[in-house]
Figure (spheres, rainbow, N blue to C red):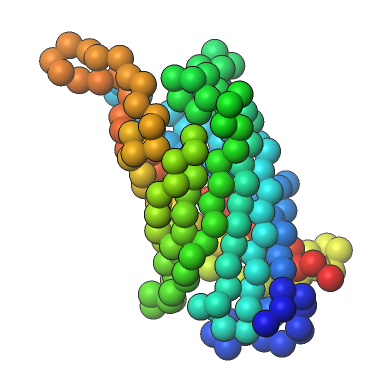
Length: 189
């Protein structure tokens, strides 16, 4: 099947038509949460792009996303600069984080999206829990889709292992990173 709009509904989601949907960066957030001391630090990436290729059968659909690591924003310029450095993302030498899906399957009313996540030239499989929020028309008459997705990863598995030891064997920064996406995408003509 082609990635162009067919205008035919998919077999499993009412109102969803096959075609290529582009992430609406003004209405999409790619964020993360990680433990720091006794709290959690939340951050987002401001610069990214991506497409969702919806097929007549949801199971044949795919997506790919590219995130500019230098666009990290945690509400602290000093921390953001450290995250861009070689201690963490090494954004100068490995500027992009990518995700390419490999499979999608329904689990009740929700979905599991499997794919390959690449950070710092390390590629590992991940699975995202996806809640589809629906199909509608935006103010410009475009068909839009919305969904939320989440997963958790070990940052050490991608070579991001900087830390500061604390008393009692504790560490300044947690290894577990919760990734969350709030996505709106528009059907391209």
